[in-house]
Amino acid sequence: MQYWQKEMETMPREELLKLQNERLCWQVKRMYENVELFRNRMDELGLKPEDIKGVEDLHRLPFSYKQDLRDYYPYGLFAVPLSDIRRVHASSGTTGKQIVVGYTDNDLSMWADCFARMLKAIGADENDFVQVSYGLGLFTGGFGAHDGAVKIGATAIPISSGNTQRQIQTMIDFGATVLCCTPSYALYLAEAIEEMGVKDQLKLKAGIFGAEPWTEEMRKEIEQKLNIKAYDIYGLSEILGPGVSYECEYQCGMHVCEDNFIAEIIDPDTGEVLPEGSEGELVFTTITKEGFPVIRYRTRDICSLNYEPCRCGRTHLRMNKPQGRTDDMLIIRGVNVFPSQIEEVLLKVGHDITPNYQIIIDRVNNNDTFEVRVEMSEELFSDGVKGIEKIEKLITERLRSTLGIGPKVKLVNPKSIARSEGKAKRVIDNRKLK
Image (cartoon, rainbow, N blue to C red; front, side, top):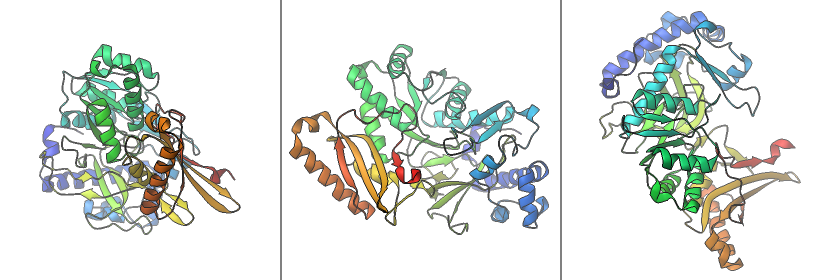
């Protein structure tokens, strides 16, 4: 199967739909023949591959779930012989058995193409040096960025995550122009760069940040501190890795690579497909992946899809930034709370606080306690108790107004919250331990 050519991104919608129809039918047939779980679920619904004529029949197909990967660990959902698998990746496994995914030669080529599209969309070319500060290991992040950089002829700097001082020195010495890492680590790097006084030695012009939720306020903070344009990218191991969708130069939603993936928005409670423009749970079907394909995979991410034409000329629909997750949603005293809501409030407070915070939830005498710890700036720390109390009160009022529930807000000393070189651990829910 042939993958990316430039015209794929600007293909007329009617031609794209025809391509999706062909590829979906191909995928359903091969999964029915090669993946026992999918075949059993199809049989339970009384469906055969020939019943699926195209995208209009997608809603008839069964969902797939993260738990499926744990139940069939490690290779039970692969759709090709293991001799055709060229690489495996896996999750961290912090909440049970890790999930394992596999890639054929064609899968790896498609993945590189998807990330290459993003690099091209932000203006990168063979003259750029792409510093890959995502982890290079079983985590999917680093390899997608690395292979995408190579695909466009850029120079990849596969430094992986960690060792912040070395990261910064490498940026300077090697002339990195594009940075790829998590947004929280980008802020950590920015803080360290400021302390080292070397900002004027950087050649960075853009950053591609993903693997964890981040807000528009956080984007502005990163752009200001690193003097770059910060772009969002979306991916997850079960679908591909970073590159499923990506922002273009206009930063107005992430273009889904629709020649490889079909996106739907469903009601997370009923599973019904929602009308265009609705907010709900994001579901993906992989229509070109060979090694580990999925049909109607429930991502648990809450977002909406935008079908309006983009100024960049790309015709693929855009997904808006996820607003939270159905399984990361916190229920505190009966109120639904998303950590992204808290971050958005905090980042609007200004320079009295830093972007470093933690949400601590506990249960005392059968009642939930809810505390938000926020790191204050050096300036506020020197202002003394009155200034600190004033900001704590301000944050408390804003969070109560946004969430409908008032947490205890505690400002903590500068640099007292542990920094992350990968995904930031923002939520500590001690109720799960009792």
